[in-house]
Image (cartoon, rainbow, N blue to C red; front, side):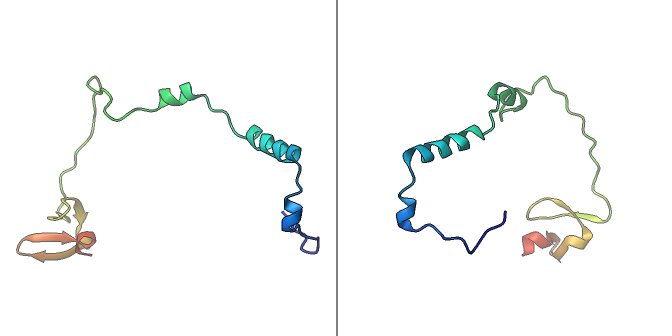
Length: 99
């Protein structure tokens, strides 16, 4: 949006002169531009934490730790050897935990 910097600007006195009707019209214009969302559709698509998942069956393939990976003794996550920060007394620490 282009701005004409040469046009006269409103002063504090001019701002107080806006009529009540103009202000109400601006408010209704802004309210009309909001989007109405059907909350029933939204509620059906969300799953709440603690929902009953006893009938659900999960299938997940677990890959064992590879030869070039280690388990951090601080955060217990499996990382690649390139993330190894220190290996003292058999305790392997990743770079994130060492920082």
